Length: 105
Image (cartoon, rainbow, N blue to C red; front, side, top):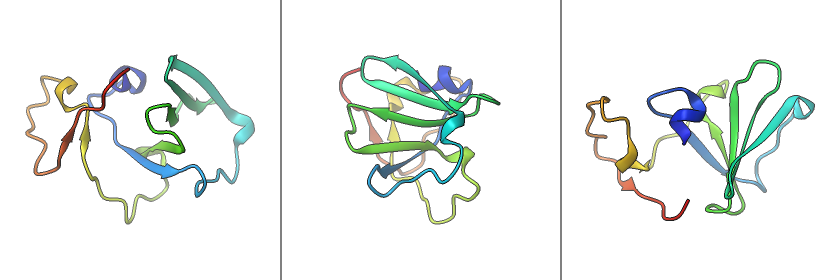
């Protein structure tokens, strides 16, 4: 689902506690789409840039597309989620990061 929503072979997300995350400008420009019973995706209503993901799988968290941040300094990957459904043509072993398969959809 993430690859389709982003139109890319892979997507890098940064997860934050909703309590520590705040959007300082542009709330009025957000559009939201319920992509499944468990997930809501938010994007810029002007340009279409995918921005946020919330899911009942990770209550209390907001996930932000890493490429949409002005700076990703200090954010290091911790795992590959949904490794089993990766793009088969990617040809990459994922390095040494753990490969996580969240349950449920």
